[in-house]
Structure formats: structure tokens, C-alpha cells
Image 1 (tube, rainbow, N blue to C red):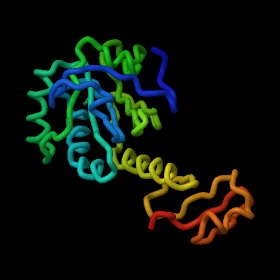
Image 2 (cartoon, rainbow, N blue to C red; image 1 turned 180 degrees about the vertical axis):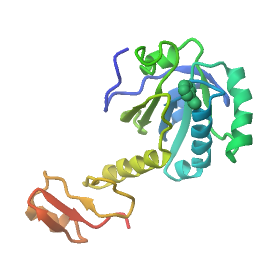
Image 3 (spheres, protein in one colour; image 1 turned 30 degrees about the vertical axis):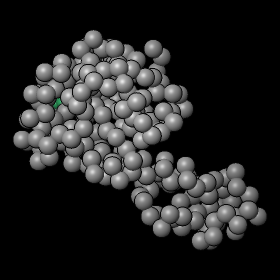
Length: 212
Ligand code: BEZ
């Protein structure tokens, strides 16, 4: 499978998970999904990542997002390891981990990068929208834990730009000013951005957060 690109349909699959057997698209339903892989169970960085994702599950739910994780380990290992995550990270596991010992899903999503590791998944992230389109991909190496606040931030940015004709600037956080896309003509700004705008350059125009 070639790498998935933004806008591609997220491939469907059937899998065993720690919360029962699923068909991925049916499980996703009308929600957004964060599908992320980790290299292996019973490893330190992965333990902290899954604990953090579990602690943020309320934030995911508020945004209509379902998290789901995957590695090439067995269901038995996942189940045993979940106990360690709850014990050491302060939040019990509260979302499914896909067991993929045959590497079916890992190959479908191109999560094994042989020049990094021939057998284990790297730290991939796919943000998938309710239409099952891939909206963001990230790839981190095994040695580097991801920043889940950034994943929430990107979901906020994607959902805001789906609702309003805006883009978000560097380091944007929910509530900050946003950017009026260059495709919007100056004469159309007043009607479409009622909170006003600032023109810093003709191509760099900002407006207050439209959702606040
Ligand atoms: C970890 O999660 O700690 C880890 C996993 C695979 C390789 C290196 C670190």
C-alpha cells in the first residue's frame, strides 16, 4: 500500500481490539477518529503516550472524536499491558487498542517503515473526519513521544476551518484570531467576517475567532 495522503479515504478493516471485534468504519460511525500506532506493548514511551491519550479522552469526546490505537502485538499482551497503563499513568485505559499481529492494518496504513524498524509500527497518527477522509498524518520515531495537546489543537483547527472560511496561524489556540484566506476579496470581508478584520499585509488579514 502506498502512503495515505490527505483527502484519501481511510481504508476500512475488521480487527480484534481490547474492546471487542470491530469493523473500523462502522465503529467510527459519524465521529472523527484519531488512529495512532505505537511500536510495542510494555515499553516506556508508549505507556506514557497511551496514559496521556486516556486522560484526554474527555477532551476528544467533547469534540466528537474517538481515539483508537494499534500495534502488532497480540490481544493478550494489549489486555495485560492496559493494567500497567492504568496503574502507572493515573487514568484507566478507556479506548480500544487494535491487535494486529499479522500486520494487516499496519500494512494497509503504511505504518511499518523498514528503514526505521522492519517489524514494528512507527508512531503514526491519522486524523480521520466523519466522511472517512484522512485530514492529517504525522509520523514520529520510536524514541520520541508525541504531543497529544497538539493533536487536540489540530482537531480544533480542522473543525473550525470546516465550519468557517478561515485558516489558523502558527501556534494558534482555540479563541485566538484567525486568518482570512487569500481567496476572499477585500470587498467580501465585511459581509462574511462581521467581527471586523485587520490588514497587516494585503495577503495577511486576520479576524477575531468566529466561534467565540
Ligand atoms: C518506547 O515506547 O519506550 C519505545 C518503543 C520502541 C522503541 C523504543 C522505545
